[in-house]
Each structure stands twice: as structure tokens, then as C-alpha cells.
Amino acid sequence: MNNKPWYVVLFENYGEKYDNECFTQGTNGECDFIEKELNFNKDLNIIDIGCGTGRHSIELSKRGYSITGVDLSESLLEKAKEKAKHNRLQIDFLRHDARNLPFENQFDVAIMICEGGFPLMETDEMNYEILKNVSKSLKDKAKFIFTTLNGLFPLFHSINYFHSKNTIEGNATYESRNFDLMTFRDYNITKVVDDNGVEKELECNERYYVPSEITWLLKTLGFKKIEIFGAKLGAFSREDKLKTEDHEMLVIAER
Image 1: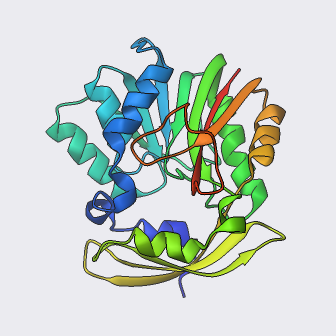
Image 2: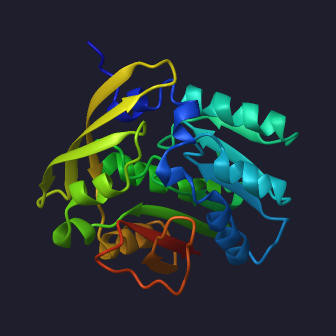
């Protein structure tokens, strides 16, 4: 019996397929936004948490930024290293659990885009450990940019409808079985065919957060300025006020 968490099993042998998923297609626009947020300052040291196949790390490195990518999945990191080598880029891609990072006061900026670990953990405490470790890795004056699931969305909309209209043949599929109003966790069945052609059916649960929770969690970690917007794939903008229609929220925190 496989006792590994679903998010570990999902990302085994998934490096090729991952880059074809619809939710990974907004890299350039998202990096445009990140650059603007950093005032195009190439001296800043960036950490990309849950970097996956390195799509944001590689694009930002191409644009002249110094970046370290960390992820739990060997399969995705191998793909990231391959892509970096192909593009002749020097990027440190390291295997670490975001709940236990070895860095302290090392980075000026952290990015965690497209649910890079947070909010996939089994408990709220584990999700908080990720935020805590990101905070520990950052210098005293730093910026943290991330996206996470918007808890306002499932109160007004069907998660299944959202996923069905964004599914392309051959990509992963998601079927929500139960959204628990007491815990704001969505229990779903995810089906995916990995790079070896193996079909996987996984019982997953993901935590949706409301803006006030995110604000409070970040305040406990010393972030002073916390702004939350709607997150549109490949088109992040400070003009997008968070709405119930937004499946994800974009969080920008500073201290």
C-alpha cells in the first residue's frame, strides 16, 4: 500500500506532462508582473518555493535575476535542471520540503506561484509551517508574492464546473466530491496519466483560504503590509480586486 501523501505521488514521473497542463501556461505574463513588483532590481536574491519544472525560475533567470528553486519532487526538479541546461542558465535547483527549509535571512524575495506546496498539506498546521519557513528564509526587509486558493469561490460557485471548463484532453482531471464548510477543504479525485503512461487516481484534499485568514497568518509572521488581489492566469494585476469568481488569489506581503 502506498502511504505517500497524494501531492508526492501526483508529481512522481510528471515533469513532461506538467508543462502541458493548462494552469502552467501563464509564465511570461506572471514574470512580467513579478519584475514590475521588484522594480526591475536585478540585485535582489529570489527564492522560488515549489518551483516545479522551474518555469518561473528559468524565465526570471533569462531576464537576469539571481534565483534559487526548491521543490519536493525529484521528477519536476530533473526537468527543471534539464531546461536550465538547455538554456545555458546557472540556477540552483534544490530538493527541499517547504515545511523544513535550511535557509535563514538569505533572500530578498520569495515567490510561490500556482500552489507551490501551500495549500496542499494535510493539516492547517503543516500549511502554516510552509509560511513560517518562507518567512525564516527571508531577510528583515523582504517581499513575498504568492497565489493560493480563494475560499470565497466555492461559497458561490461549483469547483467541478470550474475544472471541467478548463480541462483539455490528455491533462489531469479533478472531480470534487465534497467541499467541507467547517474546514474549507475540498475533497476531490484527481486523475492523471504520468510520463510513463501510468494512470493514477488520487484522493486529494486542498485547503481554500479566505483573505482575512491569509492576512492574519502573515501578520503573525511579521509581515506589515499585506495586499490581496484576484489571480488571473498569466495576467496578474493590482487592478484586479479579489472577487468571488476568482478561483485563486494573489497575495503580496512586505515587511
